[in-house]
Length: 123
Image 1 (cartoon, one colour):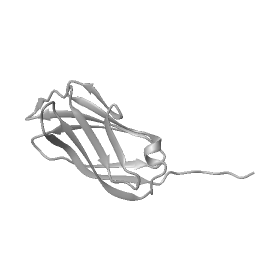
Image 2 (cartoon, helix red, strand yellow):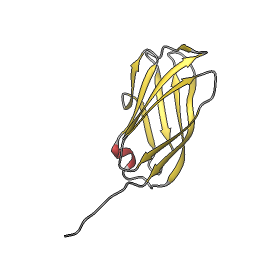
Image 3 (cartoon, rainbow, N blue to C red):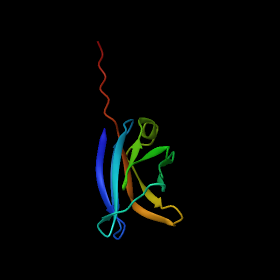
Image 4 (tube, rainbow, N blue to C red):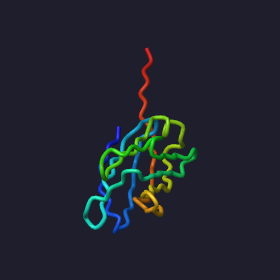
């Protein structure tokens, strides 16, 4: 299971490549700063979208959890990847909207789903 921690400073664009194994989950923990200082994100809306065959779409309360003053987690479930075409590389992005603000890009880049490894035995 994937677990990655990333720090994003909103003053610089972030290109993020994520690789997930099909039929497996994982977590990406994102710490948000602006100009090197923690950016409070309480009450913000956050959206993650991956342009997979069956789109992966996460929002706060539905796959995204704000876990700290300037930290959130994106949880990928097994069901997000188990019915996807493997070996595909697609665009994905995550945006944060502070209360009363405009959407801010957190990251963009690619998501790749790799084949799962299955071993069978016959007797």
